[in-house]
Length: 397
Image 1: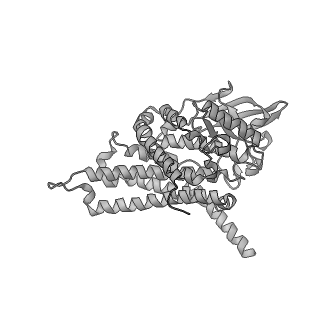
Image 2: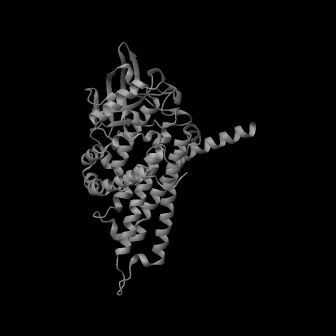
Image 3: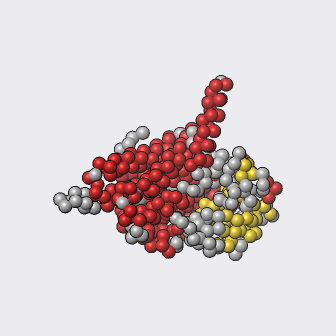
């Protein structure tokens, strides 16, 4: 792995850094306070093609579906400006990645053209109350029913990021006769237009953090879609094809970017804060320097794991999926962002709990982001299961 970014990667990073500084960061507090979609952020991101990052180059996108290492570099920069906006973008990009992996050539042609020509955002909505994976089973209740001219979709989702601005939504669904006993092999995806009269978006988004993702509950009542709107088949889906490892690279990059933003603010504040008659700075105290050094090491390690995971998926996707490299990176970044955002106050003091400073928002966003399934325990349990299974198989061989 070459740790020196290429010229093209450096260009991507520099542009993302400027966009984060000039657009995303100045808007972040306002959108958080309003709990509204960051429409100005989305406009700027779409103007520069960030919504096409994971669309293959042959369909007019950036082609980072085969270059997740660069995707990690870019998302890390954007997250330092506004992690909520970047999380919403990651969900859209994940939907594009799923189409790139699971879609037929005709589906890729159709949906990528819609996204590019319409500047459309697509929500990736899988969560339902109690639907997390447990012992190989999902409590998934959104159904897809075959009819003469296509499918009917019924059910409900929550944590529907981009609800209200996404033109389409990519849903995890299951056949009606499998509800209540859903395995990974029963699930497929379907793309629905959010403008359908049977789509109802709730107004219950009043939450601790990640407020600007606007992720309320959404219900679907007899949504009729053509047959070519089904993505994948039962047994050939985002789980069995390893798409989640790509999503995890995005999350690991965002978490480490948010942690870096919190550390940068705390360090800058401590350097500026004068505590002595001779101009001594708060940051010159050994105890403060120790914390800055500790947190810097943690953030750099989490970021490096995200970059490594992207590189391994680019090099040998199937092997990297088997080893759950994206999950490893996300788990480390989860712990890092929680530790750094909660302890950054130790660097700069209690005065920075004031709402005029961003540390409180950073902490709330980190705490909310890392609650999304699978959480740290779920991620590490899945990883541990895979390691033990491989060890047992090697022992038997």
